[in-house]
Length: 202
Ligand code: URA
Image (cartoon, rainbow, N blue to C red):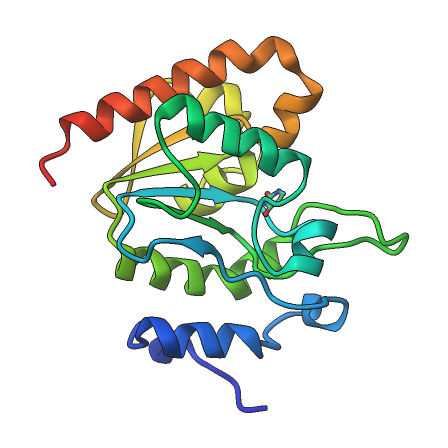
């Protein structure tokens, strides 16, 4: 396989990017994956939701957020008047499932994020969403280039910027499934996102 440089990625159109990702070997996660998970939705979506990385279900199905956390995400969409695949795009920070030696899910390592994030950055440049919602800490710190020790609780409640795009941070749906007490805070974050969307010119 030939190696793909960052300079190549920033020139790619959607179809090229998709095919390069499908056969990517830029980090070790390629060895254990069933398939890459590029993202799902409308390429012209004005809403972009970014998670952490594929889990077991996503690795099998090739689509992000198709397990229990995905069900919650779909419910969050419903509460916002949104629908998967309609004016929404869902992607992850890494496109291959990170697993540990015991084959359990784990967060992506810094070098895996560094190897993969140019793809997401190109997706964002091509989609040009109106609002980005970072689902959880990995998405937030990776896109905003923050100290990994920063808690999500410190990042929510304000509108951040990714390039020139507004980015709102909220809890990861998988975290919310384990911490129901934070659901109302997540709803407040989604309201901030909807307000930001409504206030945006295009
Ligand atoms: N969790 C994520 O962060 N992304 C997925 O696609 C599924 C679960």
